[in-house]
Image 1 (cartoon, rainbow, N blue to C red):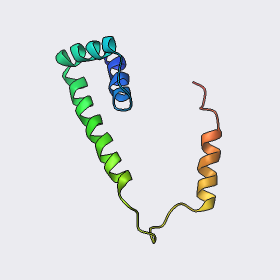
Image 2: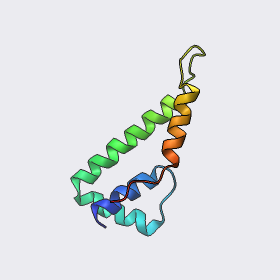
Image 3: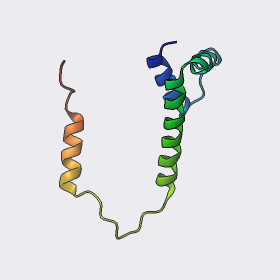
Amino acid sequence: MICRQAAEAISRALDEPLPAPERLDLWVHTLFCGPCRRFRRQLTRLHAECAAAASEEVPADTPGLSDAARARIAAALEQPPPAG
């Protein structure tokens, strides 16, 4: 397993259980790869912080996006990515 594959597996593991062979490959990789261990710690913390923030109640008077801003974002997301 290379670091790019490990990073993808680390990310997926936060959302779903990995198959046993992939979990073993990831464990072996992170045993020897300090940057991937650090990435796993950082991503795990970020995931937990986002989950905690999402579960907090937002006060009713908190401003949100305007309808125009929502439309611009939706239109931008529908555009194909630039070639290259």
